[in-house]
Image 1 (cartoon, rainbow, N blue to C red):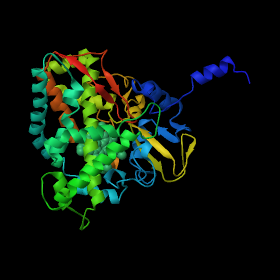
Image 2: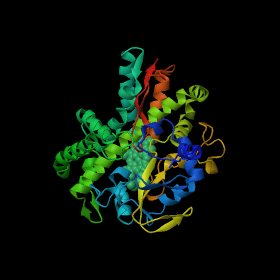
Image 3: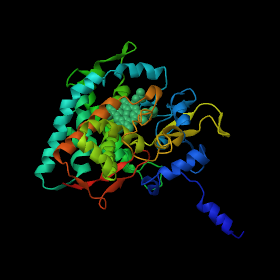
Image 4: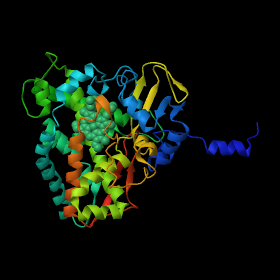
Length: 402
Ligand code: HEM
């Protein structure tokens, strides 16, 4: 059959959403807009998943674990019934409720306030070294990459000497190849290295040695019994990955977005008390976590399509946070005056991010100290290097001069 110009135009206009395509990562927002408007229940036949992009649908799915279960994985690439570690984040209520109760109070506002001095000390240490090093640095390598791992390791009670190793393994886990859903060997190796590290660490925690959350959890009871080895490993690995990657990416995203909005940066320079507003708007505008994965438990209709039991469904946080149905005609504009109290960068419902308060504090402290110590810093826009992953957005390298 001869292709007509109409066919060519239709092919060029075809709506394709592949979260692993590197070409998408610089600006997924045009595709997200088309998904919301043209295909609010979008099916990717090649990778076999649905994507929900409208705020109302994403929020509704987050609050309905009976229809959208987490038990078959929260990452598309590792979906399936046999989740390696049956940890908090892949449990549904009521199992989730009991586990969550155990850790619900570890990041209360009071505890987060207590961690602020330690966070500031850590951030200041990195900035001291940056200033001593001259008039330029790579902000990711020298500050935003390492410091959240230091903070979460301090919470868990992991020795300072082990933190670079933990960070290396956690970073490896997110490595993906262009357009490919399959986990590369490096990602699997990173995961198994973390399992090995925490397995070796476990016996001393069981004996009550060491300090921090890892020891506390090894001594804790859930529903009248101690946690199993798998549950303890699951907690440690979850905290290390969730506590490090997303916050690392949030801070670098904030610096990069602000560098492209000098008028907004000037507002913060004039009034550092506005930094929390900027953090909130970065979370909405360029969420570090772009989506979470769920699995449908029953056949159901949505926007005229039938989602079948067992189907994968991506909840596109990044698209929901730009939905003009909620955030109005300026949804695609970065505006720290917006006060976007409805964004869902930290998810919604039972699995709402446990570390949200910690992440907000860490980002605020980093931006405050950066502004105080390097007020005139400039991002080298030509030299920055994007981080490519499935659902996490950020930077591998963000060179600055000051
Ligand atoms: C910018 C930073 C962060 C972002 C964008 C983020 C995002 C999220 C999201 C979207 C979820 C929901 C997952 C789901 O519904 O399946 C979540 C859950 C979670 N986050 Fe965060 N997170 C961040 C920082 C942190 C930090 C610093 C910690 C500290 C340990 C943390 C620990 C957790 C945990 C343990 C869960 C699972 C909660 C549960 O299953 O009940 N996160 N996070």
